[in-house]
Image (tube, rainbow, N blue to C red):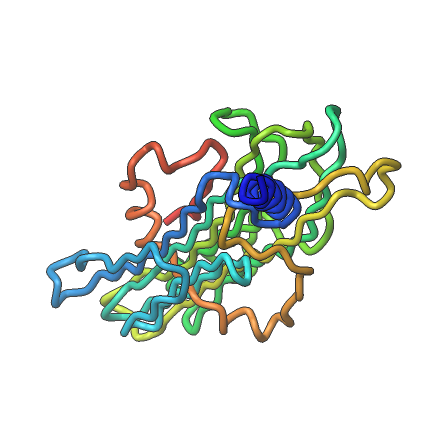
Amino acid sequence: MPMKSGVLLFAAMALFCGTGGANAGLLPDPFIFETLSSSNAACGGSCPPISSTISGTLVGAGGNSAGASGTPLTVAANGNGSSIAATGGVGEVIFYFEEMGPPGQLPLDIDVSLHASVGFSDPDIQDAAGDASIQVQANNSAFLLLFQQAACQNAPGACDSPDFVGTLQAKVFANTLYEETLRAGAGGASNPTLAGFNTASALVDPYMYIDPGFANASAYTLVLSDGIANTPTTVPLPAAFGLFGLGFAQAALIYRSRPAGRRRKGSTGAKT
């Protein structure tokens, strides 16, 4: 009897601890992806890409970098083009979340910073591009509950979608699995006849929580994939965006070549 009671107590404790934490091991694992790309005469065009599915930052020799992390939850990109080379990178995090509690619909708030920028030392070089996006959808559904983007391309200051710093809201159902995708890409192309260069950067930094104005908020627990840290967004100053790391112009081509099962409707790439 004492052993049986102990087993039951252990099982009850395991169940309680398993459902009460922010990362309870109940949801699918996240997917983290970084890739660097480059193109130059030494490679005869496009060089072999460098990719990783481990949280961290890849740094290329051409001034490009790619970073994706679940702790802290961010993706970022830097790219650089010159007269001899084009470099770029893409970082992406796909993870899952669920609001556990009484059946019903409730508002989920996401504080997010989206940044995309381009820069040039020569106005005749206009092939830089930056793209940052966040999207939320029910698992295995193509319908987007939420999508927000920041994107810049070509001429300096020509941003299709400006930087976004604010709060987004999605209406989600309790005890339902949702998927969230963060993606950043940036990069620049080369021009053999010009000596100038161009740069681009992108960043996504979110924080998720139940809307505090929701009357029954305390009855719900937000559960995320293991390895995903949900902490309040720290919005970097504009000068700090370049420190985060990723790249895109050529990297957009690599991203398009990834298996279709990993791409999601609404994912974007800056035009090259």
